[in-house]
Image 1 (cartoon, one colour):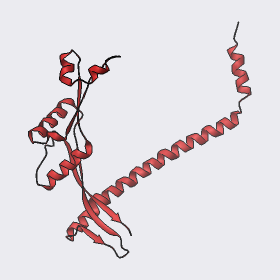
Image 2 (image 1 turned 90 degrees about the vertical axis):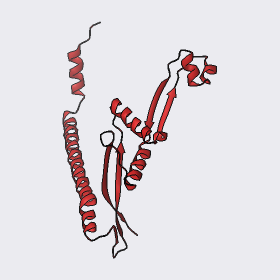
Image 3 (image 1 turned 90 degrees about the horizontal axis):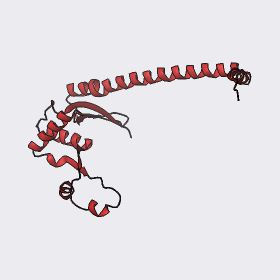
Image 4 (image 1 turned 30 degrees about the vertical axis):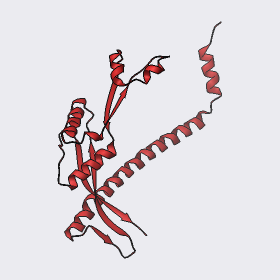
Length: 183
């Protein structure tokens, strides 16, 4: 059996409306460009919004000795601190951050997950404690983590209490954020 690819290609091309395809390809290209342009505009608008929200308005209010302001239309303008604290992904830095938390008596926010994998029919062994699993020759896998919101709350509490956290162990930042509450 012989297949004539050239003939199949010609048959396909004869059944294809090239003009219609061309119009749709052009339209798709235009839409892609419009989306990219709009996404850039949105990014620029967000940057402008962030600058006004975190720098301009907080500075003006601070110069006037205000933390909040009620406008004539009933809108409440207030500046709050936004806190962020994350643990680096680098395993050595992550372990150093965990060690620092433990040394500060904050180790209880570290969650430890220990898992042991069992084969079929070993359900009764799955009920045993990790120590028994290790003694039996299984290799438990341990994963430690701190919930991001818990770490953020800890950082906020420490900053507000005048305590620090090491910036070489954690990614830290505090910035002002303007909130508008309208009636």
